[in-house]
Amino acid sequence: AQSVTQLDSHVSVSEGTPVLLRCNYSSSYSPSLFWYVQHPNKGLQLLLKYTSAATLVKGINGFEAEFKKSETSFHLTKPSAHMSDAAEYFCVVSGGPTGNQFYFGTGTSLTVIP
Amino acid sequence: DGGITQSPKYLFRKEGQNVTLSCEQNLNHDAMYWYRQDPGQGLRLIYYSQIVNDFQKGDIAEGYSVSREKKESFPLTVTSAQKNPTAFYLCASSISSGGFSYEQYFGPGTRLTVT
Image (cartoon, rainbow over all chains, first blue to last red; front, side, top):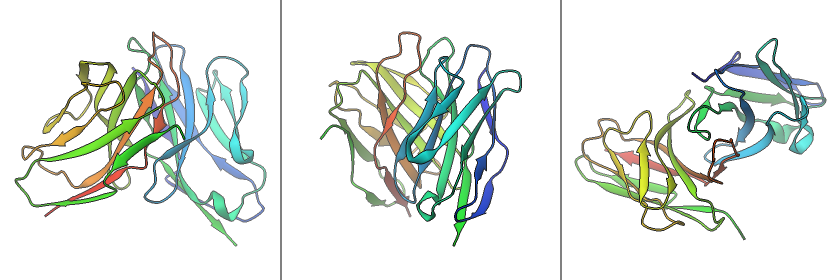
């Protein structure tokens, strides 16, 4: 079975400081992992994805994530937060017999303090 | 411009009425999905379709119905049997999996309020 745990429901950082959003996953298969961002009352936008290539994945807007199989983690980071980064972030694992079913974490709300 | 459109953005209905949410994509994707989002929760899968004229129930299908008569369209009907229909509904599409996982592209969502 696949599942995702986002370890923090809310994270606050000051503008210009690093961002760390934590995600642990569980999967009976070789997983694909994704991070999505959602601004208020909007759809989800893909930030980055891991699909068994390089373990350090670079995404849009300066975000990156590292797949660590031994720790079953896929944490999202950014060196320097910007005000526009304030949003809800979802970690997603997919895979399994039907291939493309997504399993979402409950989300992490990121606040950026000026 | 390729993408997914959902209409309307906001929808208000009286309790006991069925309502249909529209989802159209021009990405030529085979697979389409409907999710429900409630405050403080992740997205929950209602229905998905990997090919025209075929669809499967997701985790919370009760009180919902779908059709997939055309590749580009996947409308969702919220029936009067759905006990708590007020929510934000998101449609998504992807390349059909064939056993692999491809990213899903999301529409802007429809916020349904039932009173």
